[in-house]
Image 1 (tube, helix red, strand yellow):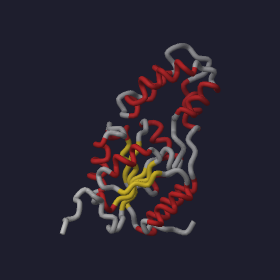
Image 2 (tube, rainbow, N blue to C red):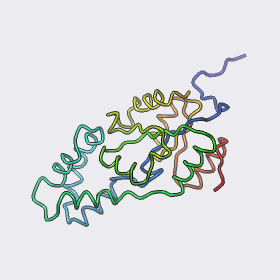
Image 3 (cartoon, rainbow, N blue to C red):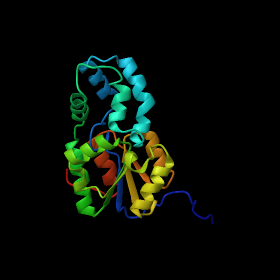
Length: 216
């Protein structure tokens, strides 16, 4: 008789930990293509030049190797502007909106099933701090494996290894909710069960199929 394939995850194991992203799952993306376009229009900026400068600097910024003020200096304030850094910061941070249904779902899952909740996200330090505070994420998240804290960014597999080390949970007992297909696939390579998040209703159904069902 053939022995079980060693690399296949054990889907019979009880789930006790939830990995999840912030942007696109709990909240809107903090500073994505759409938010930057709104900023360019609002402040009458050259979109092409702004986007080129952003692309050259943002990964470094998310790994906390470039401060928020340095990012703004390189991308926006490399020449005189008729608006202040404070005005731009307020607009930038105001782009973050909550998905109230998803936040309540994760809260309910945590307290019903006593789950560990670990965020694995690419976020810059100032924006990350604002989003955690504004939407009270620390009230139910046990650890933030944010790129700005650990100086690793998805899709680097090392950020998932670090999350596993912090969680101290076998991969087969973890579910990962993420809105980027590649990131789900990388996590699944570690034996983590992945849920590609597209909307609240389908994510609830996928969680229920894994035994994590709450009243909605």
